[in-house]
Picture (cartoon, rainbow, N blue to C red):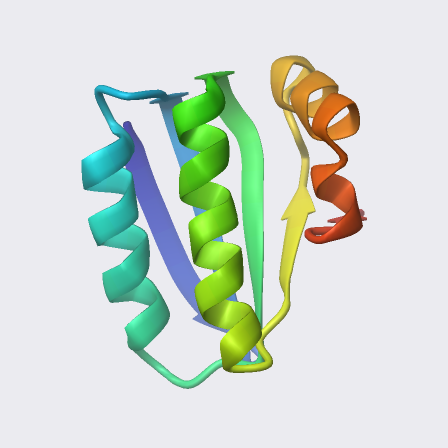
Length: 102
């Protein structure tokens, strides 16, 4: 798992590259938590265009980050989901809490 980020116009953009599963969950969780504590921003956009695989552990990581940010009134949006991620987000209803944006 590789995680890239940048802040632009009060938005934290995060790109997840690789597989989000039980092997990368701890690293992803810690890295996202550090990013989310960083610079001031008003929303988060997670780009899933380079996410090749995600299992239930990965879903748990994203839901956990959503809950932390919800407490701070910072919404999380999803953009450019890979076909695999799109299928999971639709099937699980995750788009209801983390909407897809263009």
